[in-house]
Length: 124
Image (cartoon, rainbow, N blue to C red; front, side):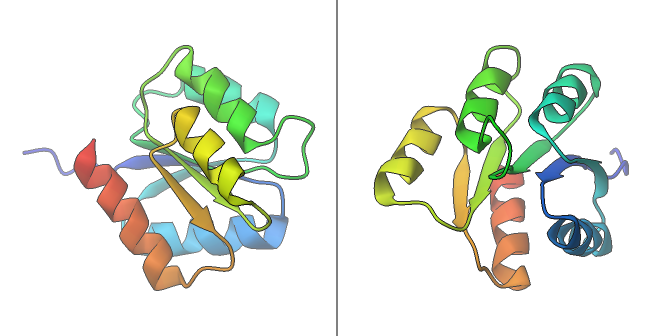
């Protein structure tokens, strides 16, 4: 049985949120690799092995999280969770159609965030 910690790629364009979510995940026992923009996410997702999960909260970049998820799907089946503060129902549907495993609307409690991460990891 492997005792290696699951590795999560966390992409968030707000530094304070990136630090908070990284810390929460680390306290839960995950290894966290971070990125601040879509270019870094795509490079890390393509090169970093093995990633168990990608969490995308990239709303201030030119290519938002749905497009980044769609591009990850071109070369990987790693599960993706999209974080967003200002999404409508059609955006949630587009996220799932693009290949996201889950969609989390912010604000969210850290307990729910962790529970959703664990749920997605159990399924993949």
